[in-house]
Image 1 (cartoon, rainbow, N blue to C red):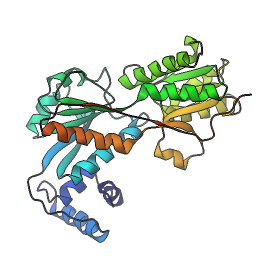
Image 2: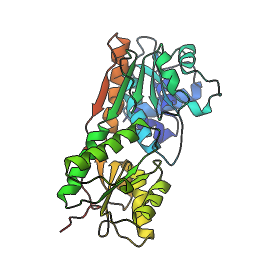
Image 3: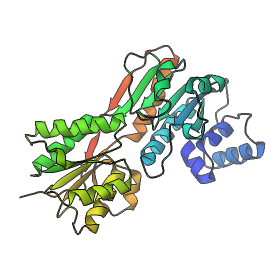
Image 4: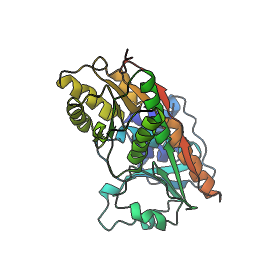
Length: 327
């Protein structure tokens, strides 16, 4: 039984469960008692609090229900679990809920956070330019700042993953491969686009700018991409996310095309929700658990005086039924 499972069973936040299990004072006693009683009933070991909890924050830059939040949720849940297990108090917060003059560093210092995990940020985020002024250790998901001793990062190996997807399709006989990019203003989108261009070159496939569609990580943009690609001669399309890949499959169906018989599709993420759908999507799998665990490890290291690291994790191709072998 994990902190996340307890929170889901009782329909309360991970932060609330953390506070209850660690006997924090800023939580209602009846809520605390209910959570602790349930935790004991399912065999969760309540550790005696030997020292004051260190406070860290996982802060979402923004929340968009139809974008990458499935990815962000799983990474933050893993981060919270390992942090709580190491006697940290974890607060989840959202920049979108803050006033226009919000200052990240002031917020962290004034709320006694010793470190923070920043997720969902892109180049246009209002805290992007504030990051370098931090006096508190930060870990960024899918963003990197070079030579900053208090700013670490964790991400998947985005460029290499798309290169691998191109090689896989090339071996299947595909030479006309489309690509659906995510939002233009994010580092992860730029890295995956770079992987597409590099992968074509490495596989001896000529680059065609008309085979790129600029999406925004939503299912709707995937559906629109399918309509666009239906007027081209592509035999396969790589999507920068599973959510957009689902949109591609639905969009191709609406255009009278079948996946994979008429066009093959590869996604990116391997979201858990795929288990409960009929998409049968071949995809590049990110290790969400390790991303969260590595984010916490970087915080722990920086709090002990170690220099921030830039961690990139490999992705794995998960073969399902959305790619066809060409003759």
